[in-house]
Length: 351
Image 1 (tube, rainbow, N blue to C red):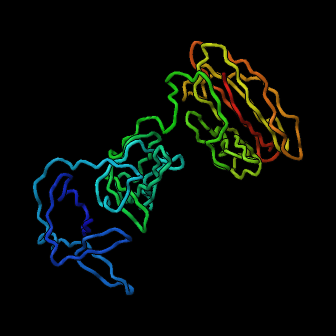
Image 2 (cartoon, helix red, strand yellow; image 1 turned 30 degrees about the horizontal axis):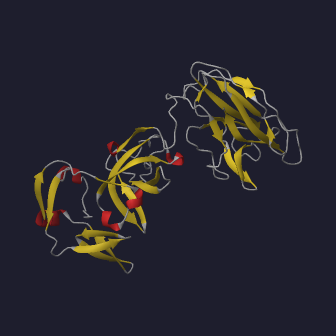
Image 3 (cartoon, rainbow, N blue to C red; image 1 turned 90 degrees about the vertical axis):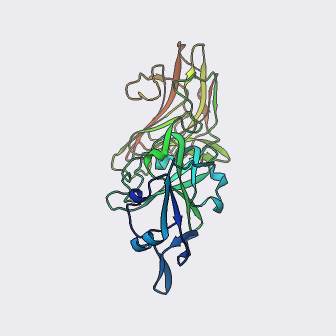
């Protein structure tokens, strides 16, 4: 990395410009693990800091070469990161912003603060995209799909981080890792035990949609005695909206032949009947509010106001036969004052 004292370098050094630097009299420094060429050193509070090349130094030591094509990025994966790739233009494929960092600004354009956003690959490996609050795209929102990211790899105190040059370096228009295309063929069968969930973490499973309709609570992963399941509750909520409504919607199902739904459910510290199970044959994966949802009847556990019930089987639930795809939704509604029951379900099967 070469540190310059002046900004607007893209005017002098557009992408594709060859640059030659006479490094005699310059300095190599270490900035939190990143090697830099700087123009001079200054002592601050007993520590030496690098000062970028001044305009006068640039005129003396920097020679512009030919302007050619943009350099081709080196295609790597997050697992390939090492110090030999520092200050190199790289490309990551099949990556996405984590759910928590989807739809967020790259940086803070108001306070001009730099921010980190987290990228994840389909193997669960993470890395950072760091963006300056002075970037002209600081206020742009991170996309919610999967794709490629091109940028320059850096490091700060042992943490690798990627710097993109513009939002065009982020090309994400594919389904997220593990997602099932709602426009693709429906699943012939479904067998979901929620083993891929994490305790006290919002459920984010491939093909499933977790939607907070009202309030900020989602269906979350939970476990007891080694068994994992889905859980929702309004107990202890602190959001201003007293009502919580959240839906967990299955991947698309092939309903052209007769199918049966079964699952198990449990309630805890019963105060209300807050679990509803529904089916839709005109949900297209995105028209949640306008789709038609039909309630399904199932066997529920006997209320227990002082603790949790055992999981009880729902019984065999006949699904409609439809020349197309259908979706199953598990809906929870509660509030923080009266309807605070915790509802849980597990072992969802369609066959």
